[in-house]
Length: 68
Image (cartoon, rainbow, N blue to C red; front, top):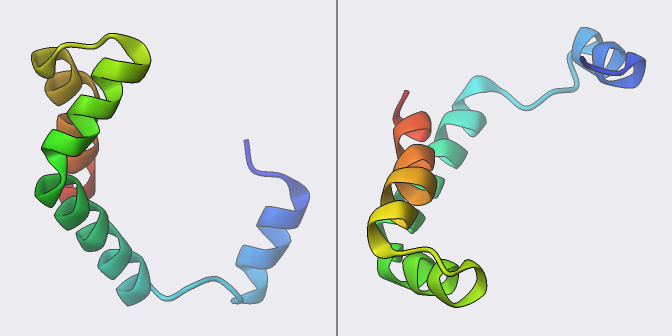
């Protein structure tokens, strides 16, 4: 649930424009796609996740959400 400060900031119009937010999502998608093997390797080393699990449960999920 958003805090009172978050609600007041949003109501004041001081939030970032939708175009900025869409660019950020596109950049997340690009970075994850471009460096997917690096992310998978980090997840393997840090958390013991296999490539399939990392792709399905981590990077694939984030890329899917960024596209949505």
